[in-house]
Length: 240
Image 1 (cartoon, helix red, strand yellow):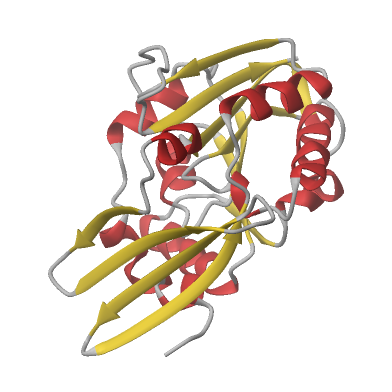
Image 2: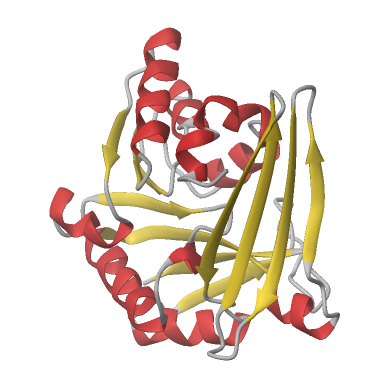
């Protein structure tokens, strides 16, 4: 079966990718009390809700309507005040004025879902526009240098009590990657193919610098261990 898999799995998202306390603590290290935070590609809002519980003002944006509806339901159940927007990360400047946001998050390999490096550069430009001068831009991307070097074509299988998810990669001739997700739940299997941009560490840093981010650090984990060639994913901290 095919369909918008991100809509299909919205109900199960938190069991597939459970809230990570280490991630929350990592983000909090860069925040002042009562910070205004934007989470791009927020999925079902777990990170927004967790940070709002700590006293921050949070907004999440996601392309999946089902994800956004689920996020609102979760926030209402917990009686937490969050804002969730259905839309593209390329439209963030339509929702926020210049120098308005203390921290922008782009976690969980969201960035490579943009169409090409031109769109990524545009996103970085808009992020820089709405960020306060002292604000932080936190990004998490799979280490595609490692995937290519070691010819890795699939990620570890995710198994929960009622879900199995496989994720495979197929390199395309146009320097893009076909990302194939297969999810099985309640006896049904859903498959979706998405084109991703296999962003290398050097490319991301160059695009950040092109868009006026002058201070950039890279980490291999939420403890801020310096990134290496063998890091599974890379976290970027950028400031203007």
